[in-house]
Length: 211
Ligand code: CO
Image 1 (cartoon, rainbow, N blue to C red):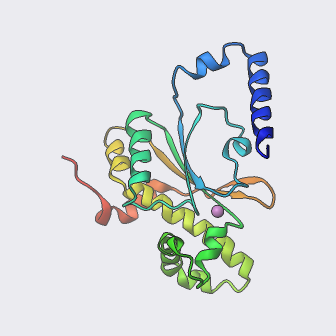
Image 2: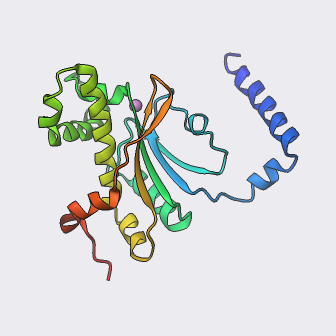
């Protein structure tokens, strides 16, 4: 069968894990205590655990096309609430990647059905940063910059979410980070965004008073 290799691989993987640590699965079944929530693209080349050298149980993950945080999306809200309130993750990472098909598609006028509304969020990012992006003459550089600006805007969307602001009342966590995975080199790049500074810029509009 076309998928039989997957089950063979799984059997081998279990064997390797148990050989290394006989209690691996009994420990794994006890629960999770991840310190990170990773929000990334669904792209099959962006295999999170592999590129970060992360073990099972260390990373809570949400993926969608072009790593978008839509603040009215029930899915992302539930993920963020659970990660922040119950798992008490210390870091939320929004990770984009160069050569992102979602970003490229958003810059094309093609009718893509359901994707039209989803990718509109990226068009909004382009609209917000139109002056900077239009000044970049090299098309590849313009795409790359849009990938970076999309991550920045999605980090802002993370901190607009009430669950994150609520957590900040009594704690400095979660810290919010913007990263890029460069599929051309395999390198992870930290955009070094200061999310508290970003928040201070928009606070007068987005702050929620929970008292
Ligand atoms: Co992508």
